[in-house]
Every structure is written in structure tokens, then in C-alpha cells.
Length: 170
Image 1 (cartoon, one colour):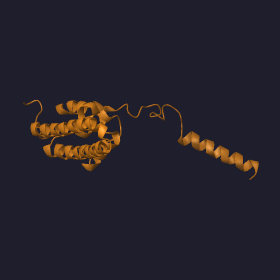
Image 2 (cartoon, one colour):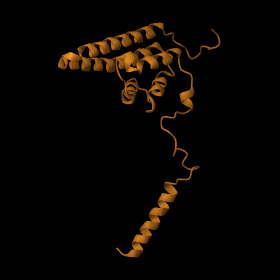
Image 3 (cartoon, helix red, strand yellow):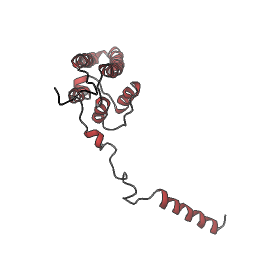
Image 4 (spheres, one colour):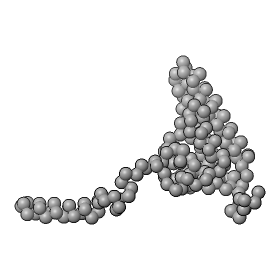
């Protein structure tokens, strides 16, 4: 390769970078954006139960389990929902934001229960393998079962909203 070919290649590469990978702030508005920062959809109102649900479900000390972002994403995919991976609170809110039917809630909570039951099985295996820690795992199992009962209560208390209902006419 001669020196002229390398210069041409470098010039072509520099042109490509300038055209396609510009660091101009007007062209690349997402450059400094935090992926967890959210958008206008994150500010939309959610049903009343969602705030209480997120505070209890996402706190392992209360729910007995830790649901990761990937777990929440899998739950959404299992019920044919598509939500972006963000902060866990925002993901749960996005999952339940447009809930209008009891069936949707039942399906969503069934998937969450599957994940929780998976954790319970892990806790049982760990408590058998490490008997000295059995009390700790039993406490987490008890909290997880209480969380699943909370889902049943939310479903029973949920009032379906028809798209034609006037929210101001109560």
C-alpha cells in the first residue's frame, strides 16, 4: 500500500465520521441523555394502586424478593407488552400505566407470581443446603407469600374502566 492510498482512506473515514457520527449537539440530542432519565410517558398518570405496588414490590425487605430490570422486562414480554429497560420503578409504572381490564392485571400478576415462586424455590434449596440460615430464608418466603396475597387483594378491589367512561362523571 502506498502513502497516497492511506491518505485517501483516512480522508474517506474522516468524512464518514463527520457525516454519520457528528458530535454536534443539535444533531446528536441524545448524547448526554441519561437512559434512566425518562420521557413524557413517564410523567403520565398511573392507576392508584401502582404507587403502593411499586413501593412494596421493589423493596426486597418488604416483598421478600428482588425483581431486576430484566425480570420486569420478561414479565412484560410474557403478557405481550413492550416496555423499555429503565429504572425499575418506571418500568413497573409503564407496565401498569394503561391497565383498564381485570384480566390484564391477573395475567401480569400471574407472571410476577411465577418469578416470585422461582425465588421461593431458590430460598428453599438454600435453606436446605445451609440450615443455619433457614430462619432468614423462611422470613423471605413468608414475605414473598404475603406479597402474592397482596396481588389477589389488588385484583379483587380493582374496578374495570371502560374506554367510553367519562372520568369526571363519577
